[in-house]
Image 1: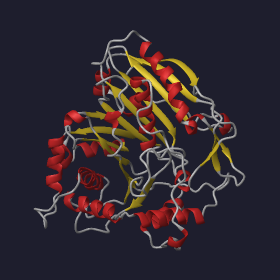
Image 2: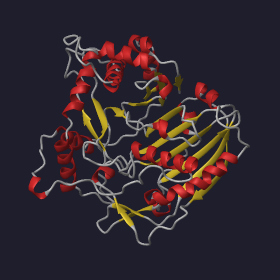
Image 3: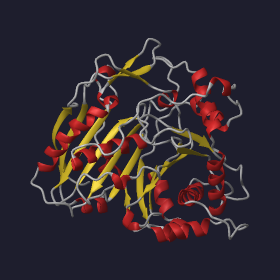
Image 4: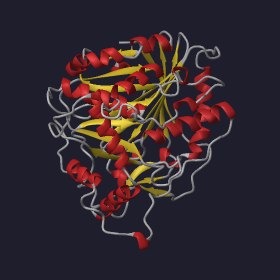
Length: 449
């Protein structure tokens, strides 16, 4: 395990007080995610400007305080409203900040770090019995003695999704580089509602609603297996090869699957084999951002991902190949529309009876795939021309059957390049790396926990 030394823990507050009494309600999509938390790490290479020990951290500490002025949801505290539902009291209690130093360079770290090493770069504390005194957001700044630094951000999923986390990091980077925000501020408005003339009873046969019902009614079990995480970098030529392999046999001249569909299909097919499915595909759940679909601005700060499940084991015995899996994912994405998402939101609002003794949250019992292709990590530049060399995103605690997160790689690897983070029980992860398809397409960088 790589050596890391924690040097300071403090609280950062905004430079401008929040309006007294301001509160932010949480949406039904927020409340579905309560048991989960996010941990995101941005890595910056050693080729940046040389700095004295602690100099970069001091600068980041100052710009963080100015950035927090635009994020009262991050600096507030959880409390119950009059109906017993969570809301944010925007009291500017601040975010917890951890400062650390690590041996070697950031590049050395990435070559050797496993899952537990990466998680040590993004501090997290579980909710206290008295949540009003508990910070919902944590920031960690780690300087590497051999060059480079890492920015870690963790938060309870109840308040934010991965897009929100990256928006926060980018706003902080803009403030550090330009001394002012360069993008629109975060939006804390409510989820959209249909106009009264367009309202209907939610379609009870909507697949999003059916999956939500099933997941809410599934008991939440803490996985007993020890999980590992494998991060694979797929350059553009490798992604193109995967797309070619995923091309449907009956439509060789068609447009072909997207990078996400091809890579998700690859790992769905391979993991199904690893888990012992000889004929079909294991049940999976697909997480997609729906901001654009709902007409929301990218700066919407709240949960705006929906989850839908696809084929259950043996439902599609005739085609568990890579082309078959990629085609099924593509069809699933194509069927997602605004009416279906609005039906889900309305059904959740009609049936919302959450409170202190009744938490209605998603209990992901299937293999989870998260599409994070739209997060644009390259735009988070704390220093001129110094983009992150990698971004890691952890959805915690891991889902029982595992999870696959697909996000953009660095621009130097090509616009179609991707990073795939696979989290599985350790014995399954070993078998996955021995699968012929994965071995034939494996990226240059891999880290095994």
